Length: 283
Ligand SMILES: NC(=O)c1ccc[n+]([C@@H]2O[C@H](COP(=O)([O-])OP(=O)(O)OC[C@H]3O[C@@H](n4cnc5c(N)ncnc54)[C@H](O)[C@@H]3O)[C@@H](O)[C@H]2O)c1
Image (tube, rainbow, N blue to C red):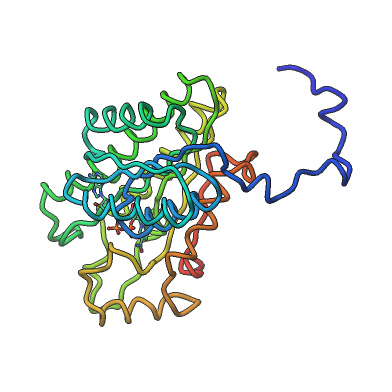
């Protein structure tokens, strides 16, 4: 380990501090966003485009129409260079192909927002089917690992640093609190995979730190987005009572932490997680 130089140990003077707007800017960078046909992917892609990034929208081929529309609308609104690729994050060949297509179109990839995720029916100890358990592991954990490691290897081979932001969940920190009559809806496989994402994030952070690649995660609470489309609104009301802010989050309220973690504002942050949950995990 080298001894820090005198300059490194000398605190910056006020006129040497960088502008926070410059540090927030993603100008000239390209972000690869999975789950980009969905709510959180779309809103965070828009925020990164507004901050100056080119965006590659990635999602399942069944979403191609929505994906193309998101890419078009966001590209137009922010005058950003955009493209979309389709594939399944749980399949290694698909992930490699999507990155190869993205690199072919944009050259360098600098930011990965690994955000694709699913929930499955009857996700509790008593009722979950093995096929559903396997599927949620495949997408939420193996898919996250593939998108992170193939993306990090690409950035390493391109010879520059980068940032990876994973979407975990408050369910990775707690077992979702449910009204007593709905205890069986606590989400077992979802919680297990999201807890694993927190540890995967730390592991990727350590494995790639020498290449200047940072890896962090975000843990949203309940955000009004696609994932809850099929949930009974009465159940959602019951869950709201357990959130100190007494409301759900909006897509606008997720983008700030993702932008922070994607940008140079967080240049000394790696292997950590930021909860965005209206205080739900306080108790
Ligand atoms: N909305 C919430 O309240 C909330 C809370 C905590 C965490 N999250 C997480 O945020 C992420 C985004 O969720 P969202 O709310 O935007 O949901 P969403 O359903 O709107 O978006 C998820 C997207 O992931 C895509 N996807 C699913 N499986 C895929 C696969 N195998 N390969 C590629 N793409 C796939 C879907 O097609 C969809 O477009 C997920 O990881 C979710 O677990 C959401």
